[in-house]
Length: 48
Picture (tube, rainbow, N blue to C red):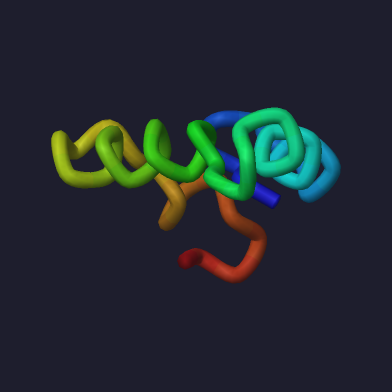
């Protein structure tokens, strides 16, 4: 589950199946984290 961008486990699983085993969602999340666009510490229930 991605609390910052609202993706569920199912969203990511469907994305992997639709893109031959690669998650474009994961790529987008990683790019956002690198650019500082992540707020996991505030949105994730465990603060991560």
